[in-house]
Amino acid sequence: MIKTDILIIGAGPTGLFTVFEAGLLKLRCHLIDALPQPGGQCSEIYPKKPIYDIPAYPEILAGDLVDRILEQIKPFEAGYTMGERAEILSKQEDGSFIVTTNKGTEHHAPVVVIAGGLGSFEPRKPQLENLSQFEDKGVAYVIKDPEVYRNKKVVIAGGGDSALDWAIYLSNVASEVSLVHRRNEFRGALDSVEKARELAQLGKIKLYTKAEVKELHGQNELQAVVIKYTDEEKESSYLEVDHFIPLFGLSPKLGPLSNWGLDIEKNAIKVNNAKDYQTNIPGVFAIGDVNTYEGKLKLILSGFHESAVMCQYAYQIINPDKRFVMKYTTVGGVEGFDGTKKEAKKEVVQSIL
Image (cartoon, rainbow, N blue to C red):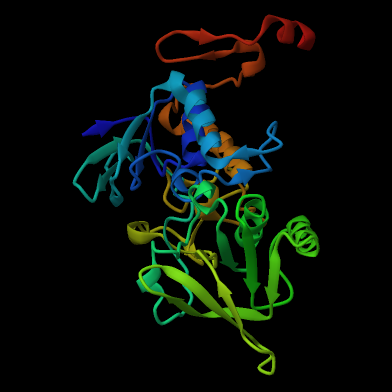
């Protein structure tokens, strides 16, 4: 039986940052994740994708963000159960919980925090007859290493942020990038749409709108795609390609969490955002992309905020007889569980005072 103060389901950026916020309150954390390493989607799906909305980082790769957070939480000695999925939640008579994984590992904690991102997920695949034939042979649903596409001909399908971002990024890597979308209008951020259209005018991206990839051709590996237009009078386009990447998003699934008695709305867990991000089960919180409430923004930085607020209330559950007075790390520094302390730089403290 693994015992801890806060048990975190999900080791993505929000779950990992919770270790830091809890550590400042002298609370120990243990994380469970079905993936083999920490980082969630940032490590598993798009480690080389640049992120632009993290404070103090005009641009940072998703994998590098995970590395920075792991460095930040080192003093707080988190425990990990990796490669296992949280399956059963059992509430005990004293109000604490036992969470059992699919491999039978039991975890005991007074507070459970669900930070599972989108939950378990599968890519949404286009309906193409021979799609599976070319999977890992030219067809991919995620981009882990952009260098795979160096000097290659790439076709990306989709109209959201992911499709736009990767088309823009690969325009400086691949020899040819084509972006195919079934509408004229894109769903992504306005600046990304404008950038993609600007690159199209410069000839760095080929845009095919009101169009879809309808056929895949090749022998042992993908060699060409056929693009058909909604305007049936318009002639189909035959493109020689090395890679086809359909980016139609993910189909999120809460998996076993959906059997825990949680209040769920549209595959997300409802929480009390007016107070503490607690679910309808006292002692169980949900933070990050896995939760929902009015005005919810599915951003990494929103998950960081929710984590900080949640930890304050988790402290009260774990230490009902203690009163916590929040201290600012800019003055007090960060003290790990081993007693070592990382002080704020003296000149910075003096300038504040």
